[in-house]
Image (cartoon, rainbow, N blue to C red; front, side):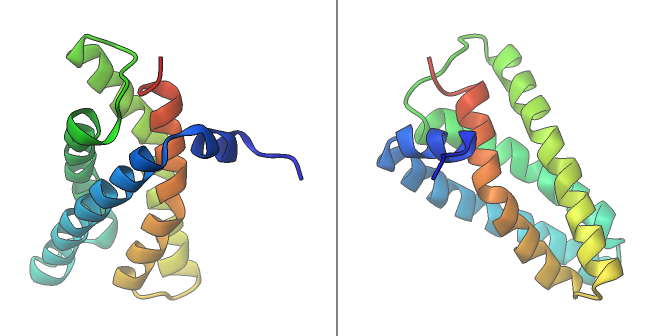
Length: 138
């Protein structure tokens, strides 16, 4: 069986990095989900707008955890440049996140909270691979 680029990156990443990414991602998800829940259920904000805000907060939190705890190597020494690339790398996943959430809610009548969990799980590994490829390797 031929390995995909994503599976090669994960295979060659240290187990420690992936484990740390899992825990950092779990903490980020809890924060993201709580914001999503409070905005949609508490404030009555549309689920897509709530998701955009929640994922954006999670993106900043994820960056801080990635540079301080998850990844050992950093490709760039300038924080502003590195953060800009981090955001750019995350934007594609943000669009995918919004699109998948919309499809699950509107086409498949999935409750928005359940859809949020499903979408986050689907994008988790892709996010790791993108961050590892673009930012956190020599």
